[in-house]
Amino acid sequence: MGPQDLLTMGEVAHRSGYAPSALRYYERLGLVSATRTAGGQRRYERSVLRRLAFVRAARTVGLSLEEVAAALDALPDARTPTRADWSRLSRAWRSRLDEQIAALEALRDGLDSCIGCGCLSLRRCAMSNPGDAAGRQGPGARWLPERLRQPAPEG
Image (cartoon, rainbow, N blue to C red; front, side):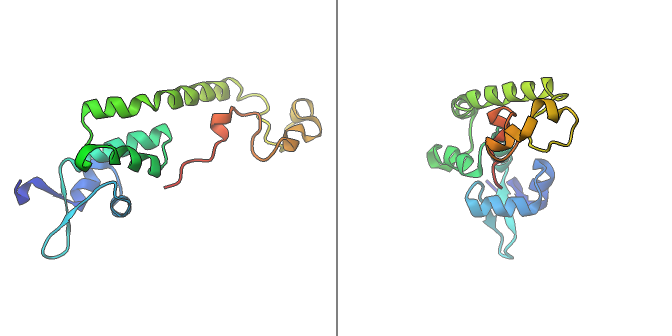
């Protein structure tokens, strides 16, 4: 592979949709790697675009960066995921996606009713959440489906 096959950070940022700061962060985490020119500028192999698409898809499913790193680390020689790899790794995410879909459908179908946030500010809350029963169950919107009450992945 010659130098013409390598992409600059700007090219990768443009093609992947990630900000340069995210690329640097992902490099620190070991999710992507770059070589350096004599002047210290990063250069990425084209395959980094597929790796970044994998990261984006995994994050969209709700995986933490630690889970993404573990999935990528499971690949031989830290190579870019192939279609077969993607199929194998994403199979484990199917149940997570099914939970998210069910939770979002429940949220959609109940948007006009109480979600158990404990606010007691809506007139309906006096009927749906008298005496802040949801608040006694713990913090957050207690009547949202559990999948939607989980903390968002960091990073």
